[in-house]
Length: 402
Figure (tube, rainbow, N blue to C red):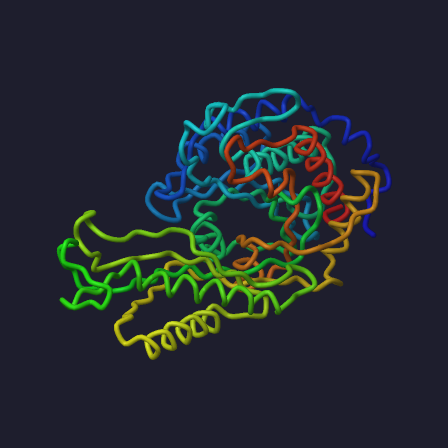
């Protein structure tokens, strides 16, 4: 595999500072960029400033109003490939702050961990990208190819930022998305289909209801229970389908809203549904399956009337096992960690589908943190993992760009 003969990776690894890593993550956690509604301006300005301090060529542009992307380039001497390290700038909402034992956006550093919303997903990955680029830049490592750092908006909802990077003509030969993977390279992920399903009813004063619907009342919430039960049964069927990298597809009801007042028979009930897709499933196929379920229910119960809308649709993605970025990422992780690692797949969804399916850029997902500590109350990341990921990215840059 490619390697610059006169550069000792271990010497570069020793330059990654754990205190700097913790402070970087903490500082970024303290800049909220919750999506929805989505506003990444503050974190984009911070990231651009850090890239400029390192000495990267920096560009910023809006993928939508108040939704900037940040691009930092460590330019090589020419004649080599472009390696992109990618991270997203948005974070999910913290939920009820009263359930947290720390401030959701406090960035508390304690016992080798940084706490706060977005610490694992994915301020830690952004910090590792910056640390790796800083070490390479300050050491004057002679790279032929370019190292491209991209911080993009809107990954947590629709991928506007990643799509805009592609639309604006940026290119990469290999991509690493620095999402939390416990430092393991992942070469596939599931797709996602979010749906809104509503049931319609006939309102009536609650004092007049009867078990037979004598007055023409139809309780939309009761009708929705039939839909929910059918979706539970659908999950059982989905669990029979398997993929060696990402497991089985899933379906889950995430929210429910129904009725207007306690003493009124509800005339509408709405749920949102999360359907995760295997890499070879299309969102259209999954939608059609759920439409068939609703149609069957309506045939069995003519009073059950439903409406279905698509909220979000993103396909799964796969990078071939023999792709150079897969093999080089595995080798870099093993070199930096000093132990074997196994390439796997990701049950969640990411901007990989944009880079692989739209742009044709071979991509892996590999970064610090564990998916099990993301999107939870008291979210956190281990500082040691942020440092280790930076070392992996340094090793990967040496293997791909030298």
